[in-house]
Length: 295
Image (tube, rainbow, N blue to C red; front, top):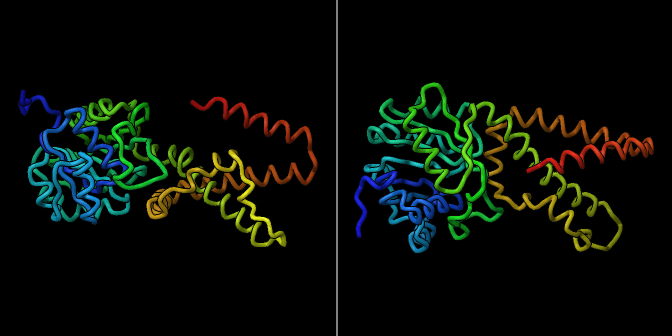
């Protein structure tokens, strides 16, 4: 039996950027019956056609104004440095009462900038589902991507309360634990626990390449790598363009955190130079205890 319109959380959702996160969200919306219609917009038609085949969207458009015309929920799922230009392009055409949200891992000033661009009849609710894979693109999308993940919602003092409730409800239905956080605090926290580890993984791979390049040995170092290296550098296989944008968008926090990390490496280096057996044990033991405390 056909569902009535009132049974849906949203009547029409527009996903701008139907990749891994946008496509996975589309699958959740369709499988959970949270949206009557899901439409997409993106740069590459073959990707959008695949999204339709996979059931992540019902149809797609080439013009943003067409895609958002009848939507009561719009999701930005493109690289974070494109958000402002996207909303500047179509923001004034957003239907009254529509909620605009995102899935980006940087918030900070971006939330306030988007609020300022959108008309007062629309609401922006920043959201960051802490989920993903090293593989990008809608071909890797899955409705289970957000199961058990945390999703941070970043409202401000002017965010519409009903809009916050709807966005929280969406991510809870997607299987996420939803938390609220100030946008600026979000960037400080994620800079430490997500962005810095990616920088460490990128840098470690470059360090190993440098060791290989300066070695007179003919052996290929990475041929002898085990689970430790693979586990430590797994996230180095992430999208270069996406992480370029994240690093630059959270630049100020990351510069401070990189300094902290360099300080820890220097301290460990000094323990090695001093052959400080007790100091090494203490350092590693403290790290072990901290690691075991991760949930």
